[in-house]
Image 1 (cartoon, one colour):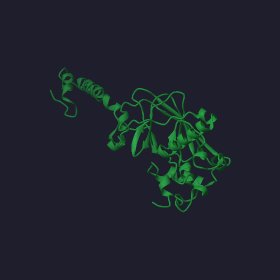
Image 2 (cartoon, helix red, strand yellow):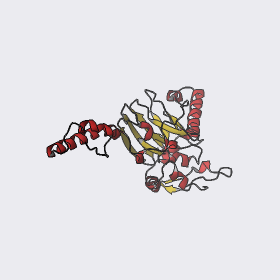
Image 3 (spheres, rainbow, N blue to C red):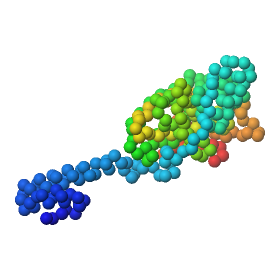
Length: 274
């Protein structure tokens, strides 16, 4: 009997039953070998090709777990003391995390008039994105959505009760556990620019799950496209010089969407000191 060296040795049990000198046997033997090879290699079809595997440093399972700020907005309507503490909590979340569960009074936290940010929107610009990530057999080797920051002021995010959101905090990726009955509000680049760097847009990414489908719906809010975005004049002074070059919002979105390296590279591109 002759073995085909391109197939694993265990296929020999099929070959040994055949007469290699018979043409019909040869045809049947070839079919058997091909079928056996297909069965043996089928598990490999469920593995990600090497070119799609993330480097170890980007492994979505290399995360820490921390106490994520959850803010009760109902306290904004209570006594002045409760309102002040809630505004401070929102301001702290914007500075330290770049996101919080849901919130308002951001202008007040910056020391601006309550309606400042709303007025800066003009007619506004809104975008909706729905993301669907089916189960992935090797979730540690890929991402649903690469690391990035949002270009607008706020992005309201709703999830289907399956964890997947991760945010970068103190140069570490932090997994965000879903809390039923809440929305997540991400701070975008526009708020970092308007606040002259006091508030931080959050760099975030989406992971996939081995058993469950992950669905998220994000609604981004920003100024109208023709708006020239830049730091609020009240937040620029001798001890805090202007941190970002004024730019047309539409041009900033184009810059962010065309960059080949994600993260917060677009924001860095318009910084006055790099």
